[in-house]
Length: 221
Image 1 (spheres, rainbow, N blue to C red):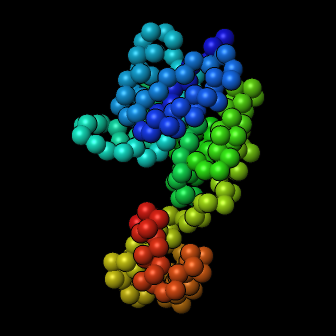
Image 2: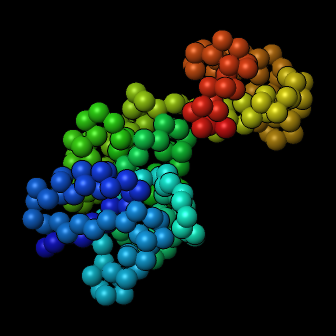
Image 3: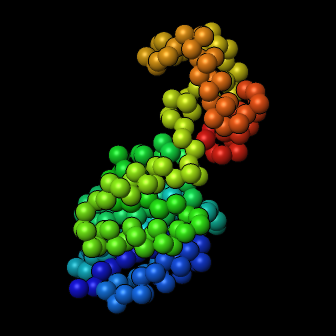
């Protein structure tokens, strides 16, 4: 049986690397798409032709250019495709470093694996593909491995909320009131100050201004 795989990635070199992995075996038929809309239409057409794809390998971030598109991110693509074909297997292959975003992929989008683009990524991707087609299950060890990757920035969504308030000029008193109103804990001024200091240490920030600059550089806020 031939497994159909669609690789959705803006960069041709990534698609080529993935094809080289799959071409080691004669049980894969591989196609590529550079845009989310293009990937969506290919999967929709394959379903209509009664030869659906078994696996989607996609990035999360897609470059924008002159083309007008309806789907602009990996999450939007995955969500749309899951409505078309709920049983399709999905591997996210990305250099994303936000741990809360990766957790959301498993929890809210029910992906099968996340593989970080980096050193040894080809080996890890091959392992993820084999886990899906050989074991034919969602492999929890790959989820844990993804979330423990040394390149990840282990920042929670509530950490982001705190840093955003700081960047908007909120005082400790104002943040405390906002958190109490929203039911976010801890919410006392002293505990929030300790929380900020822990974030500074975690991200090697010298002060609050530096903390905001680092999180902006990482694309967290």
